[in-house]
Image 1 (cartoon, rainbow, N blue to C red):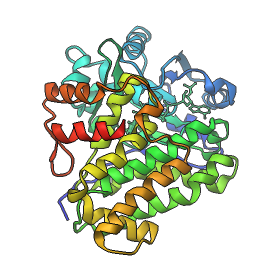
Image 2: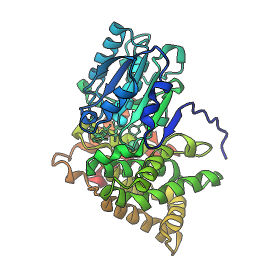
Image 3: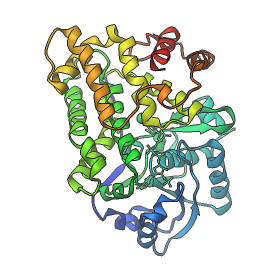
Length: 387
Ligand code: NZQ
Ligand code: ZN
């Protein structure tokens, strides 16, 4: 097993009715920026619940953080924070609002142009330089509620870039599984597939000695396969909703990544597809992931075979099981309502591979994946196979 440090200071408050605890979680006397997205929180009553729970606090609201949040929008919130002398930010929303708030938190006191947080990937490590924040999660998917990373789109350059740092963990996150009742089916499907792929990014590498991490990863996959198809149909079922939500958090709160190699190339390529075509994050992963496993088959064969045996009970030679495991993954994505070809989403895809390869080259991303052997040539093959 590789050496590791496990640091995760987020106070995760999980369960029904937990939004009521907000007044104990937010620092006493803080002036709060309540940040939210396009307004779903008004329709489903979560905004009202938050306001009720925060009686007596001074609150300034900032709405309009879009899915795949834009740098340009978030900088408006930075200006509000400076003007209003805000002490604490409360993100009420899904991954986009939470990621947006992480960026805002890092940008307010950033020394220089905050665009460097994204383009130069300047890490945010100094807790004295951030605006502390908490979250009320409304969409299980990204794990952003319990990790210190985020992804922001620069609209002017059509770039979707990740950022993060140890100072960017939420102080607390309230995860009430009943919030999923108002989610559109498409977003529920996205949540399952995003979380599932987060596990695969950290699991489908090569055989190693992190036996416990493998078993935890496999149990998250099994739970998502068990509850995913049903929770989409019955989001009011609390057993389904709570297991779905907890699986999503566990998939990307850092635990299963400790002491083991990880890949993340599916996400890096997928982010380009969202930046170029606006395809939902999870759906880009369903397009790219299986083709990445095909192109990188020799590197990933051992782990694909373990995945095939333990998750899908497949039998045969290592080669056969590994191959069939990819087919089973595609089948699961189809069950979850995903289209798995780029041409299902856009008709203008013929130059996509070259565009992405050029971008990666400009950024110096010449070798991705757990062995850094996903070269630009391989990226080209993966994207072309995804057409
Ligand atoms: O904006 P509102 O009106 O709130 O509507 C949202 C949005 O339109 C809606 N929604 C959220 N909760 C709802 C609801 N509608 C009804 N009822 C509710 N309870 O759902 C839509 C999508 O929301 P969004 O936050 O964009 O979705 P998600 O949570 O999937 O987040 C996706 C973003 O997270 C990034 C992605 O790249 C993407 O930008 N990721 C963040 C990660 C992280 N921080 O660790 C890791 C992930 O891999 C991912 O890259
Ligand atoms: Zn993701």
